[in-house]
Length: 362
Image 1: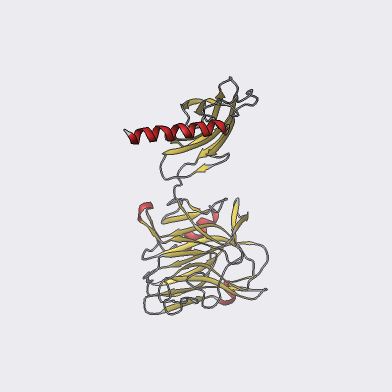
Image 2 (image 1 turned 90 degrees about the horizontal axis):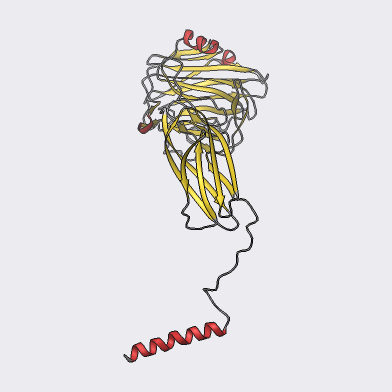
């Protein structure tokens, strides 16, 4: 009983001190007149968003931020003119952070509209246009990887986004946009991703792309799939597995070469002058193939180098580099390429010359 008496006296003393200090936590404050309309920010999707997935129907998480100077009454979300969700119970009556999962977004162009009302009846609406792009269907036999570089670094077959190193960018390409290399910049992809059906490491391999040369620097890696070099971790150059496609020369002429490993040694495919380009500002279609018996390099559908090969080893080859020899082929300073690369395709077969020429004409 004595303890309760002392507790009551303590609480009463705190209340008296608070009142004497002018503190009154329950005194209402007049918020003033409601002067402004609600403010809406659509966080996702944004204007012009392209949604790329492998499915024809996909869920989308719509994210909205709405505020009002006095109090929000409701927020409604509409897709293509049909209301799909409405909200009126907010933890913070002036600020609503809304995340809504819409389960059945279909292919095509869409308009998302968000409307908000406050207690005084003021209202505002914001809209964005976006698109769910139809899944890409490979155009050529054996095509397993395709990056068009049209403003992103996405493989449209597996819907895998590249890991970007440094600051590559985009420029006008052979078709729409192209990859523009920069110093210390390149892209990487995993060579395998079972969850997305990606596997670049077949018994045969081909790559094809459009290329506009910038001969500075005077040597660079272009495409590399190689293993870690444990003996030279800072200057990797293990050539017994995977391949390295690169260029080297001078400001006036660059020679393109392919090196491939069979598991115990490596083989070179160097066409010399036939496989050389000048810095003339023209687009060239480049392709190379690796089969169980030979390797071939093509410029604009013409063979510029070929030779016997006994089959590739992919041991330890878990990474594809685009636009540089880094990180797996740096021993001879074949680093970032500042050239333009467009329409990169990879195949799980050795393309024939007719197939390469048909691709160029397509």
